[in-house]
Image 1 (cartoon, rainbow, N blue to C red):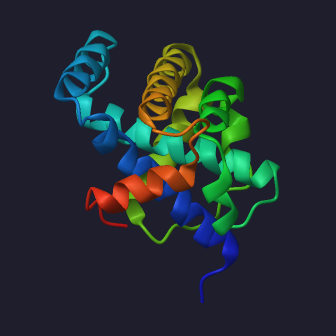
Image 2: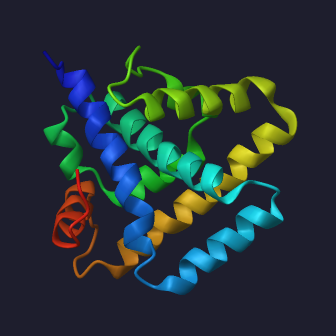
Image 3: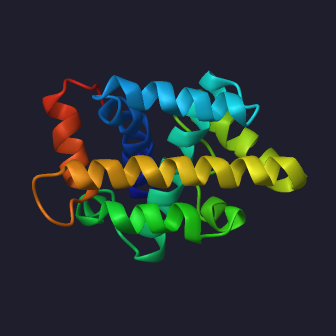
Length: 166
């Protein structure tokens, strides 16, 4: 049986997984992000997975702070998630997470994120760089939206239209 907390995480993780494919509708954006990751000394695949996870963590932190259910996440503004990505402390993003994850990849990358937080120094700097990249991606999606103040629900609808699996 899946708890609402687990469903909330699943929904947040889905937001993270669809974010970059939606941003990459303009192929040059992916090339630019890859250049940034390489310039920062971050492996491209690992960096993109950390950006996805960062998005999930930021959305989850916003939802937990507002006591939202998984369905309530749909109403959260992309700008609020973008603000959480750069405005919350790294350890604040880890608060309230499930203790286990249905997807082992989520558990693994959360542990990598935790390691970066605990190690500090250059690793903390990398998290700052990734949070800035995430904020940029979220704001791109917000700017592309045909409506003012797009929400996570709008991203989910665009992902469904684009055929991105949940």
